[in-house]
Image: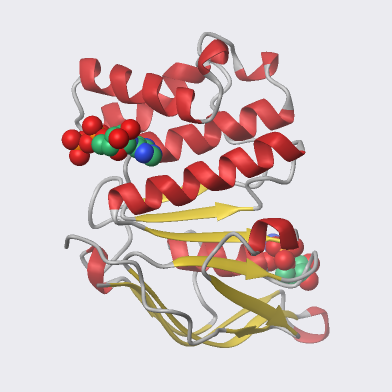
Length: 227
Ligand code: ADP
Ligand code: ADP
């Protein structure tokens, strides 16, 4: 199933002499079961690509469609999970409440949301942090809780923007492993942006950004899924 299809996509910031062409000529497809690393140095356009894939940002040229997600990314509740690069937890809610909230909004029962939140926090080694407020978490701890929030919602497409940027080596490896295992378990696609080659090599496909262009690879066959 094609989850995201980009054709001739560009994203320009600003206008006139000040215009920055972050991405241009982006033609790419993300399919069910694919595990993709988007790599490139800081400022190369990785966040822009992930925001476009998520429908959080719109192209200034070209088209993006989400055929396998009902046409648009909001077509199915919880269809797209996004791990943001910066702080994204809601300040008045504890870690476990942050993880449960998207499920509750999507109509999951409180009992199931609580169970899935506890499982997901365990997967990211954050069970002991469940009752903490975001202000009581380190950057790395908050990043792990943000990953748990996405895993628990069981999206069809997981987009993670530098999800290991604030993590030590042990948690870096653990988080990338749990993202991969969860994507396999769900039959989801996973797209991870990173400037860290140690993270990128864990994914099956490597897409490099050079001079605002995303160089996709042919890649191995996607892992079999049940859909
Ligand atoms: P990366 O994630 O690889 O660090 P980004 O996608 O954040 O790269 O940025 C790509 C380019 O677009 C950079 O030159 C950046 O300065 C520019 N850019 C990103 N967001 C904005 C914005 N909101 N306004 C202006 N320029 C931006
Ligand atoms: P189902 O919901 O399809 O009945 P479960 O959720 O009980 O299946 O999990 C089946 C298997 O997948 C178990 O071995 C479990 O440990 C593993 N698993 C469950 N959730 C995740 C996850 N988010 N990431 C990785 N493995 C998981």
